[in-house]
Image 1 (cartoon, rainbow, N blue to C red):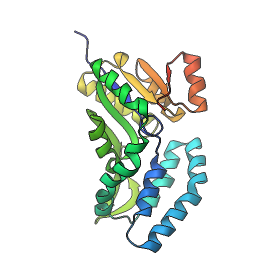
Image 2 (image 1 turned 60 degrees about the horizontal axis):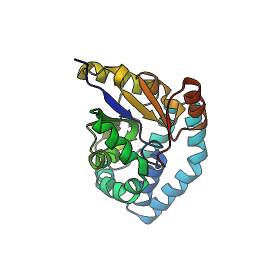
Image 3 (image 1 turned 90 degrees about the vertical axis):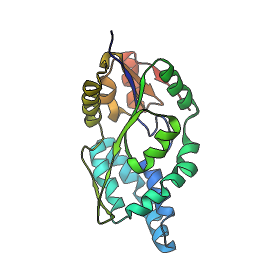
Image 4 (image 1 turned 30 degrees about the vertical axis):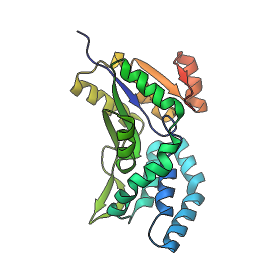
Length: 222
């Protein structure tokens, strides 16, 4: 009997149009205290070009720079805002085709797994909404209820995602050659390459060219 298989999804740009910066900006705007909210929001907007340049160079560098901005944030406050963030920012940004893709994948008998660099705080309501079977995310380190600006290992980015998928497949008895993987970004090339059915979704320029060269399917869920 063939082993079971799964569909592995990236999140930002693949299933939803929001990204890490949008989520942080939302939390910053809703911080207690008008002045703190205003200064954090403006600072985030000013830093967007830096984040984009870092992400083009290295997703790990982006993570190191970006998550420092959470330093000092209250864990209780972030968890309190999580459902509100989902209702007001994330759910409206889910691509229309995402529901159909997940439903079709589920009908094929594939396990639904989200592999993302987004924070667990923002992913939990989304995973529940989409009915996903499993998810792995980045997690902030908290000390005495305050974020340190660091991520707990393993940091979900690039090759780490592929490594996690391999380990997960072995543990769960999945056949990687029968698995599917979906992403919009060239930074997820390792994640796409580790399965038998890689698919570029709403791809950036580099990933689109790579998909065309390898004859991978290209989907537009927008």
